[in-house]
Image (cartoon, rainbow, N blue to C red; front, side, top):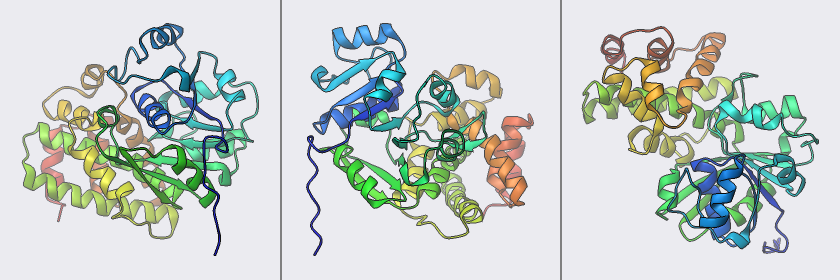
Length: 339
């Protein structure tokens, strides 16, 4: 029998979080509530001042109160990187490279978990692939944090689940030690790339669900839409990975469901606005936070063309977002292809 040493605060790695939005705030809450220290990169000095005075983030999840002795705040990303053996990237994919370019020392010796559900626009790669190809971070040092999990429910301490994925079991075991608490359970996976693609694709399908809702399609139609979306996601990932993923597990089906149906979902909200008649640009301006599905759709569609896939739901969302097609007409056409 193999005995595994119990992980405590004394033998856990130092942890740094890059990002100060709602998801970064939620992850910081989880880790500090689990009794561990966080080095937190908050790029706006005025936000740091507010945090120090009020113990909460001034812009996101303001109801969350932090124990400040468990936080080291810095507006200098290099200071956080220097003091952290492990990094969690929790910025929208749109701003990841902008943050990484501020780092003036190698990060190839770090363990890095991506909590970002999208791709890096500058390289048109998933975050893990971007770190490998552009920053020399070995694949064995990479991990992903996926849902199903909304930051707003973490703030309310409602029971939630995180999936931690890595090629290395030791890495997910250690991550479980600081990302689990009374209201968060962790699930470990070895399908890092599959979960990263699933996290990207589910945002596109949530857009489709939102558009359908905005056009006043009912629950019956949306249930068929989402079941078809799951099959399309499975097909897409198999084309990339050349091996099956556990598609009915919570990191795939569960995250798809919560993103497609939850009122907290930014991607669903963007879709609803488009379905109700707003132009894509007007709907984006209406949003106060980034909806990753908009950018993910362009990336996924390029892969679909390269791999010559048949993806009617992805195609429908793409034609609405990027080709100016009328949502009502596109959904009518899509409805004939669903089974």
